[in-house]
Image 1 (cartoon, helix red, strand yellow):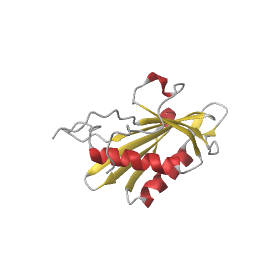
Image 2: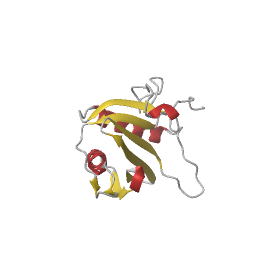
Image 3: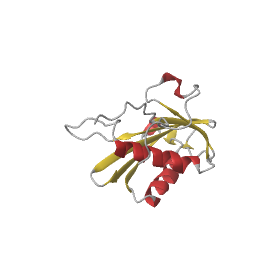
Image 4: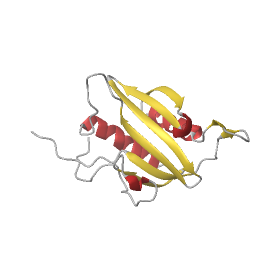
Amino acid sequence: MARPKVEVRSAARFDPGFPDDRIETDAYFLEFPGRNICEAIADKFRQMQVRVDCLRNAGEHGWELDLSVGDRAFWLQISWIDEDCCILQFEEAPVLFRRKRFDDPVYWRFLRALHDALAKDGRFRNLRWFVRGDEDVVDGVGKPTPLDDSVPAL
């Protein structure tokens, strides 16, 4: 049986209820902001029994997490745009000779779990989801959830 065609919104925008944790000199950033947000998300995944393999400074792109459970690996990035806007991107990590699977129920479950955890935390205000690559992610309206309601719960 064929899986339903699903619009997967794997990028999110939110207003950060976190302090600006950048470390900078007069000339440049030593660390871009968003580490505290990435650490908070890592804690949420640990509570879901997901292994957090790496918290990484991604320079001007922000902060990244590598996550895994079983043989599945996922990647998350937080980019602090300004005090009113952070961008989150979440996808399955690429594996040699295997394409990224946005149409996979396991991926959908992780995306839903991430959304539910963030939506319950008041520090992730005005959480809106977008299709990755959508140019309107900073200024657009987005959707309230990462998946359509027609996707069955797992």
